[in-house]
Amino acid sequence: MKRVCVITGGGSGMGLAAAKCMPKDKIIVVTGRTMSKLEKAVKELEEAGYEAYAKTCDTSNRQQVRELAEYAAGLGEIKNVINSAGLSPAMAKPEQLIRVNALGTVYINQEFSKRMKEGSVIVDVSSNSAYMIPEFLVSKKTLALADKDEALFLKKVLKLPNMLKGYQAAGLAYGLSKKFVIWYAAKCAFEYGSRGIRVCSLSPGLIATDMGNLEAGEGGSVVGKKFLK
Ligand SMILES: NC(=O)c1ccc[n+]([C@@H]2O[C@H](COP(=O)([O-])OP(=O)(O)OC[C@H]3O[C@@H](n4cnc5c(N)ncnc54)[C@H](OP(=O)(O)O)[C@@H]3O)[C@@H](O)[C@H]2O)c1
Image (cartoon, rainbow, N blue to C red; front, side):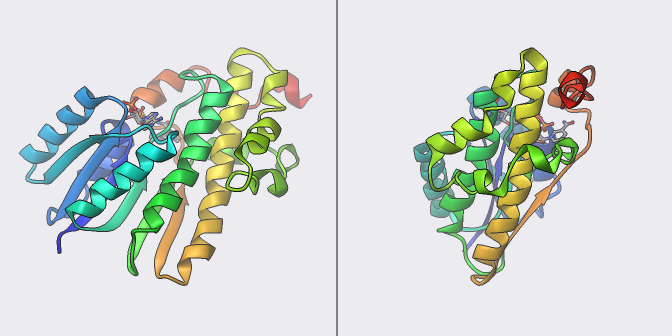
């Protein structure tokens, strides 16, 4: 059976760069919301000698994530999931940042782990901005609501960002969403470990992708100075 590597956010940036580091005997599935980007990525991967496929999926939509997992499982054994899909503070408002970066990670880990076997790996991409968020700003109890009560999770996690405005609000929501990714990946590592599925998070610093370049100016102000005073 062929081995499959699924890369969310694989149409650009770090996701596409990661695809190009994969061994060529793996089938690569790149996914994101924009088919034109994915088709371009597939063309690049095919030119580099990969068997690659494009499938659109909004990771903040559980049904679409489920369909993506079914599609990938139909191609072969899912060995790797690199969850690189994400939005940054300059791209979206607080609620969308939490829905895509945090709840998207819940849907990806849950829906894919159902179809993964021993020896497979999930990598959830976080951010070093998660480490700039002081511990007291979010409780583990709130984080744990994400896969029990989404509405309450959103309400609690968005409480502080909603007290701020503009980039400060989005920056804080981004940091919180990525803090969640680190916590959730560790939780899943514990839960799926007994089935031989490894889960880890990765927290890059500022990287010169489209997103990184967009954030280069204001990226340092993830938690507004005024807010911390
Ligand atoms: N670049 C940095 O400096 C930096 C630093 C720390 C962490 N990160 C994290 O690294 C990851 C990759 O970022 P990047 O720098 O490679 O930026 P990027 O090139 O913008 O990649 C992000 C990808 O995610 C996709 N995406 C966005 N929303 C999505 C959704 N709802 N569903 C599915 N796909 C979605 C985008 O495609 P569509 O818009 O077509 O959906 C895009 O291809 C992100 O999680 C980001 O937060 C980046």
